[in-house]
Image 1 (spheres, rainbow, N blue to C red):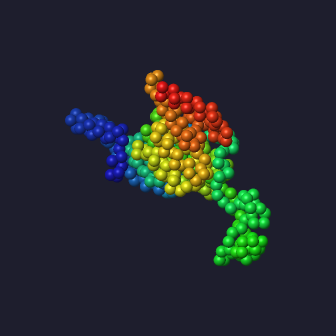
Image 2 (image 1 turned 90 degrees about the horizontal axis):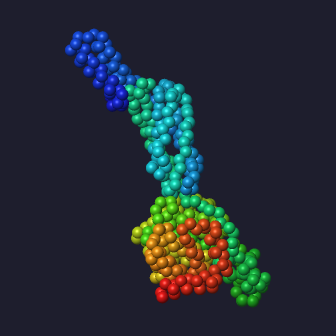
Image 3 (image 1 turned 135 degrees about the vertical axis):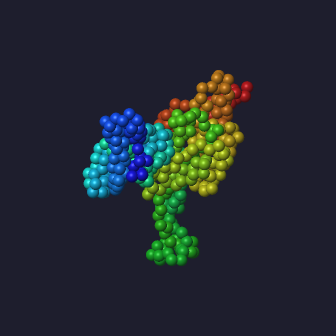
Length: 432
């Protein structure tokens, strides 16, 4: 009963106050009819509180999200299944699922009645235009009487997580520089170097099967040699994402950083499907290897939560990459760079790595006056030239650029002396 009294709505409290006032007036005026009205006004909310407070429903709730992982701007369907586990029918139920602000307003659904052991399902959709992981729930159930005089709240503690990943854009198939770099002991490679007879041999190790002994190689070298176990040749690629806060401009979903994150996701998924052994490194310290078992999910989940960092510098990104030297193909997505920062990236050219940079001119995400625009263009050209001189292949990115249109520039032979000469002329003109 106490819970019911605490759950009186504004209407219920008004009825109770009106009943008390009418009873006092009836006593002063000596009106019996007014006293009857006062009793009716006071008893109604008390009966409602008794009805709602003593209703001990046993409710079970199950929530499902379809799908649990959606790209930016896509919808996910949330299904709530509520079941009455008790023998008593419920009254009117108001369901409210709590959502973060980014997913929209809280959905509210009214269920008139649930019979004994009866279940009912309701559904709604959510949409997010910002990457991230969002908690859906908990579900709040409000029980009320038919007159709306009393309302009690019950909450289910369970929540579900919706992951909003960056938009992945299909890319055209091109032959990339360094696509044959990697590791592994493949028979085809050894044959091309040594010949058929000793194509894939190594020294005998304790425990090797004697049936694998290669007698011709043993006779020639004077040591016991066995055939190698053939291993697939792996093409390796590393995708770098620059998370320096001062390297990007713009706000919200249209910021330069969001373009870079979406491009990193598109390139990573494209390369993984092309057979590359992929590694994703961000300036914030994330270092993720994509495996066949994990699929694209581990990459996209990481990119769903990546954020700009005020403390990150280019040296930090270089250190993260060089913790493990994989070689192969390196594709970097960089915000605006200074010439000194571009020169620091030359350290990633070791171990036979082929480096391709998508260099964002983040100043184009802003409306700048003519003089500031000229200075920004000069700084961007100088940084691009420093990357070229360090051995990087550079693809310039301006606001409004489409990644599928830029991607063929990463192919072998797409960047020649014309681009180098143009950049050199830009820098020289700025210096004059």
